[in-house]
Length: 311
Ligand code: MF3
Ligand code: CO
Ligand code: CO
Image (cartoon, rainbow, N blue to C red; front, side, top):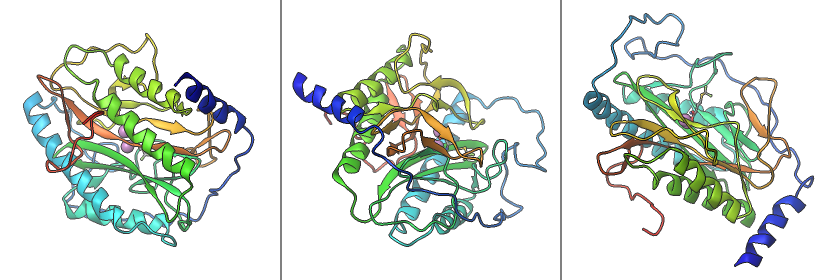
């Protein structure tokens, strides 16, 4: 047992310097339109934002269940189209249409500064997160993260997962498997009275046990009427992250694990986050609710399994 851990650790550090860039910026298509009858979040230019009192907790939760399911449905639709040769821009068009079809606004579109230009984040191979859909065609062996956020009924639902494109090498397959497990280990720590620190600790431990690094520069976040809110959910252990969870809290858990080191760089587009060492990175994300007794995952269909460790 101890020996295996050491071997895995050595693998990560001996890999240093052996990775190379596989994703380069492509052409970004013109802005897609959102029909006027779809309600926009307040950060979209031209949106009237009247001062609002926060929703009552039970109303927020009710709305977030509906929005979370919509985000999951969009994921299941776009997943059908992932194959060698399709461009990330074509996947963006699908997410855009499927979101609007459900009465939602694609939250990434025009979010932040500079305004994000597309309706979904598509992050391939060494891209950690916030990749911008463009003219790049998916290649055999790529791993692709699709990060979907839907704004509907005045609340956001945020969800991502990593897919295989064609035949993917074993190391990448293992990275994706371990990252998904790490997310579920984090979700399993969610219960009223517990500290958010337990989430990061569980995730980092699982990453390290398997010889991987957990990215520190990007975090999970509170979510609801606001896309990125308090509390910050770290995916590593530190005493400085100890918010006590209470029923009705909603936040994301979205670990990013890398084969090499966790340090990141930013492309000139000011969005695309890439590993410094060009090692591959995988991510999974759910929006979760703290219940009276534990946790609910809001970005899965009610019929889908909750893949808790040992379940
Ligand atoms: N969905 C991302 C998250 O998990 C945020 C994307 S912001 C964007 O928090 F502007 F890049 F879309
Ligand atoms: Co998120
Ligand atoms: Co997200």
